Length: 488
Image (tube, rainbow, N blue to C red; front, side, top):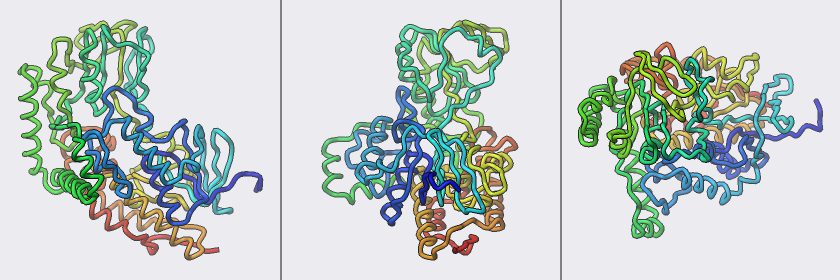
């Protein structure tokens, strides 16, 4: 072994909500020999990367924030991208974790060495080793592009919502938007008033629910500052309301009817044209794909300069898009609102003890134990891994559950002077069998749609099919009996 290579006890990959939260809680537990690898030049994860017009969260701010760092000063009910990024920065600075971040450092390769019982890590800035490796890379880090014939021949401008071209002036342009996911729902109302023509290419209509966003009042911010219990009560109220979506997801699909009625009433109220309403009516159960909260999207589509196109695209030409029925639309710019890759490239770079990558395992079957550990990957933890994300709760709640579990695991290791930990394969297999049984009749599997909630063969792609408070209970302590633990 080359002793000149830098060694850290803990290396975390990613400095979004997960990475920053992990660093805060690890330091509180007495772990200070840690490093966060961040490929960008700033922290914040997806909230640093996504800067498209209208970018905001679809979970109320009082719930989409750390429970240990409440913010009484949110300016809106739903946090905007800039405000959320400022919040993450403030939390990192307040808890003195910025000094642990190596900015502009991309993970190239991380391989477990069984002989030395440590991780060998290659980055864009050199090599290092670590006793423990934690993936906090997130699920919305890399853009997904459609495979369209002739796309490389287009002579105009193209960009993805993740890489928004702020230097390109859209005013007066003929704009094609491909995709109708959460990002497109947010940026379409922002650009619609300024463009000459907006063509929205829709493969399937999303369920649009009332958002009812608003600015917070100075009086309520002062109340939250002076009476923290009010903030906790608001957070608890939103937790219960969003947790209730589980009734549709995994309890009984008949609970979908009130939600679908609300979505249809929203459509009826905001879209006057019956033919457009027909195009914008989803043909699958609500919850099968992510429902989107917006009060601006549907009215923007019911404008004279907007056309919703549901015919498939046959090819792209240098100055136009041609549909399968032969219709040709001349456009100046193509904007992709096509979401993110289902298997982040970082998953290719984590190599376990048998030489297989995390991506190899995921493509075979989305797998982990509690979304936090993975058989075949000793001394490795992750956040929001397969079956560690919820379709009926704020991601921050699930992340905090995983952070507590990971910190408890490392604290237990330290107390036992152990140097190696790996979940038992049979424990993980039993967990995956449980997930499969509970997922069999969920709306994500039987709701009549395809999307990133499903694998290509129609299985649950990794949502936890139970209540998030039940998940919190399961991760409240480190169940060492489920692991192979070795001491020096």
